[in-house]
Structure formats: structure tokens, C-alpha cells
Image (cartoon, rainbow, N blue to C red; front, side, top):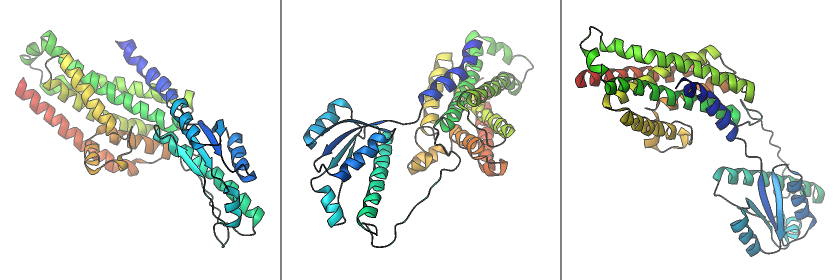
Length: 351
């Protein structure tokens, strides 16, 4: 059991952190009915990019659709007849981009990168054929941009801390719940009820070791994230452990609540996985909370993983201080007191 628990940081952080890599490849099929220098320039820029892989070309869209259907092409680039002629004489022409949207994230990135290449070629053509922009008779506007907090857009900087959060949430709830239910199954709970020990002391004796274990596992996960993935901790490392300790008490309270309403370890395990699945869905792990409907945002307000994930990313990636996460910490503290109070109340009623 100890080996299984200690192996979790290596499994969650190393394997799952590596699996969640960046999207750096897209296959492209070209339909060039214009066969002009401009269309060839766009194709040449795509071929020179590390992101695009030109898989083939044809003169009809029917053949391209067939290739996309059976060979998993990410993008079809279609240059219609007289594409360059309209661009030069009429200052207006169209390129059709057909993206495979089975994977929405890959589709959006593919569209954005291809649009950027087409825009760059359009600018070159404008400079070549006119002293002014083809799309506007005014001056050409240049838009410099930069990415804050994750300049290289490395997905591991976001994914690996999220895996540490998921690991802590899962193990904390599972161990705390199973630890108490085990006493019910082996029959020692009745013996403990006739001893002078208070129920609060019994619960604290069960959850404090779990709290210490998860602090150690979190430390191992952060060390691995630094050594293997070079994830920088911009903020205070002590603040990371402090807020983790506060959130763990809320997770332990959830585990205790599961334990007091369960009679067997099997029931506790099913309850735990059901709740963890809800936490993951509404925990800013799969879908950003800001993109959720109103009822989803309301569910996230009661989700410990949502608070934990947001605070961890603010401290580790952005370098936020205690004042920046104080409101979330206060909400977590309130939820902890309420959940632990309900757990003790139900525990006293049942036992």
C-alpha cells in the first residue's frame, strides 16, 4: 500500500505530464486550381514550417474531401481559379480553409497558423504590387504581441501543476474515507464508542497522518516537475505548501463525510470516484470555468479542486502573493468548517 501511494507522483506527474504535450503537427492537403506564384508562395511557406506537413495535392475538392475522410487530414487549403488575378486587380480574393474539427483545439490552432501564413504572403504581395496595402488604402498596421507568464507556450507549465492538484485531491479523499470505513468493517468502531475517546479526537487521529502523507507527495511532485519538466515556481514555494495544507483539510472533510455515510469500503470507493469525477469536470481541469454556463459556475463555487487549481496556477505560474488569493482561501476555509461540521453531526447521529 505504501509503495502504491508513493508511486503516485511518478505515475501522475511523469507519465501524464509527458502525455499532455504541445500540439506541434498538422497534416495538410492542397487543392490549387490557380497554379500561380502567390499560391505557390503560400504552399512553400507551409512546407517550410515545422508545424505543417503537406500530404498531397489535387485539382478538385471532391478528391480532397475523400482524402480527409479516409486519411485523417487536418486541413485542406483550396485556391480557387483566378486567385492571384483577383488579388492584384480587384484587391480582394479568397482562400478556402477546411479544417478537421474532430479535435477542436488542433483545428483552431491549424486555422490560426495557416491564416498567419496567408496574411504574411498577402503583405508581401501588397508591397510588391502596390505602395499601399491591398485591403486598405491607409498605412499598414503592425501588431506586435507577447505571451505573459508562459512566453514559450509550454503546455507542461500548466499541465504538470494541474496533475499535482489532481493527485492531491484523489489521494486525500480516498485515503481519509477508506481509513475510517475500515474501522467499521473490522468492528473496532463499536469498541471505540465505549472508550473515553472523543469522536473529534478519533477523526483527527485518522486524518492528520493522511494530511502529512499528501504534503510529502506534493513535495515529490513539485521536485519532479522541476527536475524533469523544468517548471518554474515564480511565486513563493512556502505559499504553495501553505495553501495546499488549507485545501487538504477541506478535502479531508469531504473524505470524512463520505466515510460516515458509507458502511463498507466498496461503498466509500464508489462515492469517492463519483465525487472526484465531478470535481475534475467542474474543477477548471477540462473546461475553463469562465466558459461554463451559469449553473456550472455555481457548481465550481463548491468545488475544492477549482479553488486549489486556480490558486496553484496563480502562485506557480504568475507569481501571485497571499493577498491575490486571499478571497479564495477564505472561501475554502468556510467550506472546510461547514463540511467538517456536517461530517461530525452525521457521525454523531449514526454512531
